[in-house]
Amino acid sequence: MTVDIRITEEQTTEKRAGILGLEYTDTTKITDKRLFPQLLNKEDMYAMRVIPIEYSKNGIEFGITTTTSQQTMKRLTQQFLDHRVSYKLISETGYNDYMKLYDPPKKVIYKDITISNDSQTDLISQVTATLDQIRADDMLAYLTSQAHKLGASDIHVENQPSFVRIRIRIDGVLHPIAKITHERSRMLTSSIASAANISTSSNTSQQGHITQKVVMADKSVVNINLRVESVPAINGMDIVMRLFNMEASNYTLDRLGLNSIERSVVDNIIKKPNGLVLAVGPTGSGKTTTLYSMLNTLNIETRKIITIEDPVEYQFDGITQISVTSETGDETHFADKLRAVLRLDPDVVMVGEIRDNDTAKTALQASLTGHLVLSTFHAGSSAQALTRMVDIIGQNPLFTSAIRLIMAQRLVRKLDNDTKIPYEPDEATKKQISDIIQTLPAMYMKPDISNFKLYKPGSSKENPFGYKGQIAIREQMVMSDALRTLLSKPSAEITSQLIESTAVEAGMLTMLHSAVFKLLSGETTYDEVFRVLG
Image (cartoon, rainbow, N blue to C red):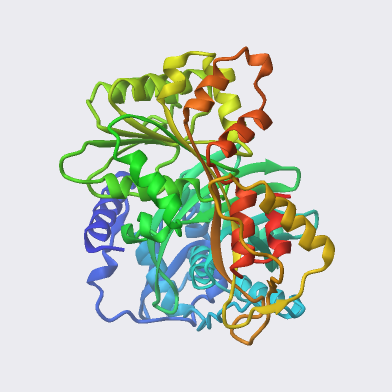
């Protein structure tokens, strides 16, 4: 607690004492705090919210808080009839400071979580024991700090009938780390809800954001930056917390892993002063990271950039960022916000997500009137996204020409180069890969696969799973003359399969093409590709 906050609390407590007709004591002025455990045990002090401050043969002075009952004071007066008993109102923090002297916190050892291929029983027992003995605020800080050390993307708190399971997602895969009681979980949930400004009693799903610095019991400092999603389930409120790293240097095109062709496409598109760029994929596919990397590249003194997000996930200098949730808590429509933003004369606008027809049409209109608009869109592929956009906007040639780039992507686990193991694929796998290569656009040289090897994960003490981070497999659909011609046909004739084949003929590599190249170069595994792409 800062000095200013503590001073304010003491001033408020003093005013409260005057209203209640009680004497007040500022415990910060008591430099030599004496303890009198012979008068009350710590269990009574906790239960009654009272502590003895002074004691002599003739009198006892008790410190009480605003939550101490009149019945408690009468009881203590009766208990110590041989002494003159008096009461002084003290602040909640003053009471807590005294209780730390009467009941010193136990030394907590925060053991690092280690994920391995072995049975998780010991790990779950260890982490559960740690969570059972630490403060509620420290539970969140401990989980966050460990998730960061392990490179996790999410923390999941899931209510089961007889316990609450905690799992973390590393490189796209969930790992169980603890099973805590519902009582203990309520403490964790309450701590999360308070920090994220959400309600523990809500009957609807909620979103929140936690940005704070926590000093844990062992004096270590944890920076917490989480997006919180909650939903009421039959056994309690389930929570998913997405971890964010606020370093702007992490969000650049150079760190997206784009190959030379993909990078050239992106560079050429974002150099243009207007148009619509869509990042497409399911939740957790890296869409927002891709858009922010583009924004960071565009973020120069001569450009005005505004984002509309729900919620604001990363904060950067030089960019005006707007949350769709107003200060009063009323949800404001994306399209309404976007129309308001366009009156501010931005050069670049990022819309966190196109969710409805009105937002889609407003974004396209903005891209036609001199703005570069970036947004995310939920669809399985670039072709499916374009099909949905046509359904939304109709067959308007102006709107169609406004779409510059649709980039679909997925994240797959990357093999650890130090442990990966080459192997000879079977004939069925060879044929499958060969068939995919035969569908490459004509302008691409087909790789020689007469004698190729694939790779599988190895294992080491440092890396038991054989994977190290994630890489994106992408497809980039650039609006071409062939696609414009296709989109001018009656909508009944336009399918996502036809759009994709037309785009491939014009030079687009599908996500499956991109995945095969990564397989042949030993960056990921056959099983991983088809786990993600199906």
